[in-house]
Length: 72
Image 1: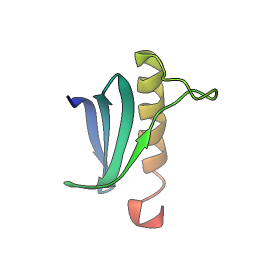
Image 2: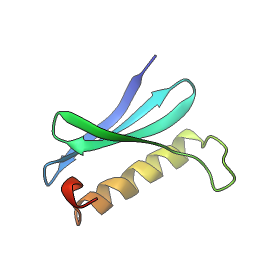
Image 3: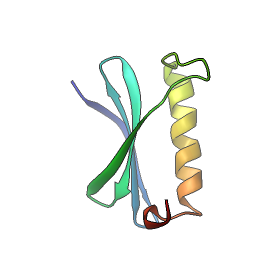
Image 4: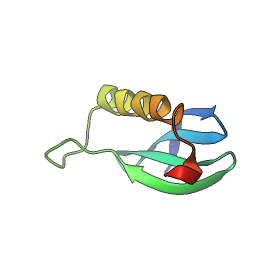
């Protein structure tokens, strides 16, 4: 079951933090259109805690201020 935890739109990019099957994912894309899904993992390949997932989401939001999805 997908659980949308956070979503924001920056410079026409939509970034969502999603919890699915006990894992966290960032959905990237243009507004209303998901282009790619990135699983959030620790450097050792484990699933992160919820606070770490939120930090990665905020990092993605910060990065989207400087990049548009078409440039990724």
